[in-house]
Image (cartoon, rainbow, N blue to C red; front, side, top):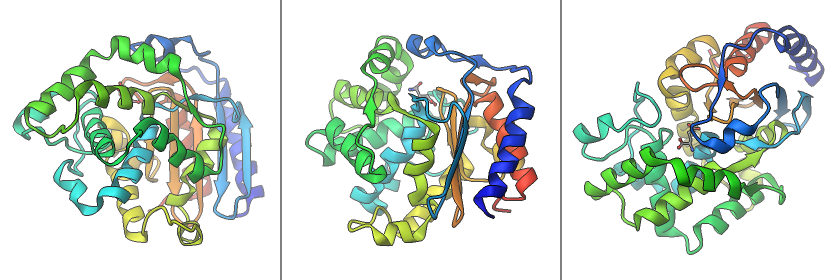
Length: 307
Ligand code: GLU
C-alpha cells in the first residue's frame, strides 16, 4: 500500500481516538515512569522503502522498557545461536510479565525471552559475550538504526534499581537453578539499563525494520540476523509480545509486536512496514490502552494483518 493511503487512514483513526476516554493508567511502580504526561499520543509508520509518516507526538522520546527486549534477544541470538534456547523457552507464559510462579516447576528456565525472567537470562547471556555490556549493547542499537543519539535514561534506570524488588527476586531465584552465570548485581544493572532506553515512535519504527525487510539484512555488511532467525523472532513476538494478553493482540490486531510499560507498542508487517504507537496509559494487562485500540482499527481499516 502507498504511504499516502496509510497517511490518510492513520490520520482518520488518530483523530477518532485522540479524544476517546482513556481507561488506562500510567505505570508508576517504577516511580520515574509516573512523571510522564498521560496525554502523549504519537504514531509513526516506516515502510521498508523508508517512506515514513508520523502524527501526534511521534518525535517525543519515551522509556521503551520491554520493547528493548527484542533488541537484547536479537544480539544474544546473533552471538549465541541456537544454544540460546537451552537457557530460555519460546512458549507464551499466560502469566504477568514479572511472575515468579512458573520458574519453580520449570527449573529456572523462563517461558520466553520477553517476560522479565527471560529477558534477565538473555542479559546474562550477553554479559558472558561482551566486555562492556552496557556500552556495546548501546552501540549495537545505534549502529542498527544509524542513530547515534540513542541513549539510556540514568534517571529511569536508577528509579527501577531502587524499586525493582521482583526483578531482584527473579534473578536470584534463576541463579539458584544455575541459569544465571554472572554476578546477580551486574546482570540486574544491565537489565535496568536496557529497559531505560529512550526512543521516539519514529526511531522505533526505523530500528525494527530489520525484522520487516529481508533486503535490509542482506545489504548490511554485518547482516543483523539470517532470514530464519528473523522469522523466529517475529514468531515469538506474535505469541509472547504482550504478556498475558498476547492472544488478544493477535486476535484483535494480527501482527507480531511488542509492548512496554512506558506505553509504547511496535508492530511489524513482514515485507511491508514497522509501525510504532505511544500512549502512556496502560490497560490492566500492562499494554497501552489507546495503542491497542489504534492498532486494532489500523489493521481493520487497512486490511493489513498477517492473516
Ligand atoms: N523494566 C520493566 C520491569 O522490569 C519492564 C516491564 C515491561 O515493560 O514489561 O518491570
